Image (cartoon, rainbow, N blue to C red; front, side, top):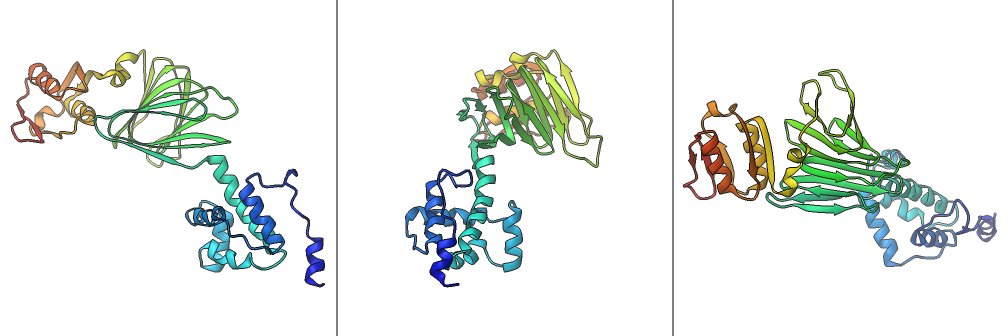
Amino acid sequence: MPLNEERQLTKPLDKHSEDALLDPVFLEFITNQETDQPSNTQELSDVWDALDSLADDSFSELAAFDAKTAEPTHQVIRPFLTRPIGFGAIAAALLIALILPLSYLGLPTEYSIAKGQQLTVTLRDNSTVELGGNTLVTVQEGWGNRSVSIEKGNAYFSVTPNRSKPFTVHLGDSIVTVLGTTFNIYRSKKLIEVVVESGKVNISENRSSTRVVENVDLTKNQKLIIKKGQTLQVVRNVDINGEIGWRHGFIHFKQTSLETVVERMSDFYNTPIYIRNKKHRNMLLTGVFKTNDLDNFLASLALVAQIKVDNEQPGVVYLY
């Protein structure tokens, strides 16, 4: 069949049809390829650059294509797009395979908060996340997804209700799912704590070879403690003001080891603190400490725990 006759049989894109791509840049991209017209817009160049970072194992369609070509997907497809007819449809299918998951999940945005700093992030649905010092999180928002991943630190959530699109927080092997509530999460290498101020959250786990996988619901004034290799612990009737007091400049500890106290308070000070006397590490302390005053914290330790504080060397504190 002559080339021009084959083109006439190609179904033109109708921007009002259900199958049309909504993004005008991609619409122009496919239309130009079907009519064999070159596209030189900067936007299309940006599209190809964006595809570079997306063509990985996250998308099964591209992974399968790459396995056959042994080359980056866009480098193989781009020459095809200069040929007439059917290759425009191939490009459309691959672009849709990229666009749909991306628009559903949303682009990830990372927030890294330095020690002693705080930041409030407002999401598109007006949910807010207050981040404490020494915190690292990643936020993703798409038309079908609201999620946050916490690598470390303190985060206080106020979630706007949306039953059709639950809000999830990823904590390694654990996932917190909420519909609309206020709660706080703290994560370190050894410990995860989830405290609910209002509403209800669910904590589920991925499969584990070290212990029984659990599924827990938490309601107002309840706290979940997750330690590696141990059974989940639920604490009821917690002092919520003490648990989320870091937002207002203080932390309340109750029968907490000195090692944990120092670790938590170190998120708020740029000066590292080291416990030199190992016998003191498991000493239990109860008290309220200010997060914005290192000298006050050290003086309180010396008074309450009778610990010797050595801060004569600039930039470091030793506890004996």
